[in-house]
Length: 96
Image 1 (tube, rainbow, N blue to C red):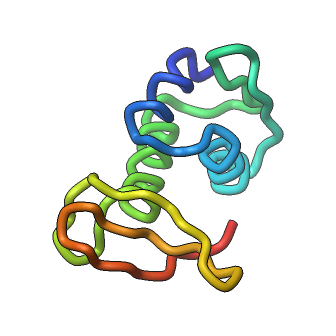
Image 2: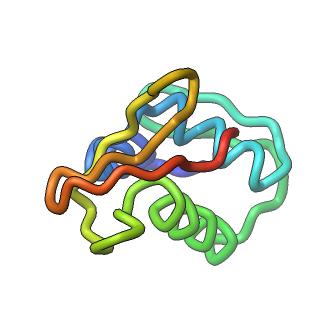
């Protein structure tokens, strides 16, 4: 159980469904949202969960150019891109 799932998603300024889909895929286990928490089926260590959240931040939150977190995910021509509000950079991100 990730008790503060909603707080993390809000702090990252990311859609909860996108964040949840990433975690389910990366952890390789089923999971569902339960109010403000995420419940996963399986034996997942705290460290493993931290690693996956850090990976999400690196892949979908931090700007690849300036490494700031002032970004948003936008879809252009059916391609998901990370757009930086600080430096203006835009770059395609991996699909889930």
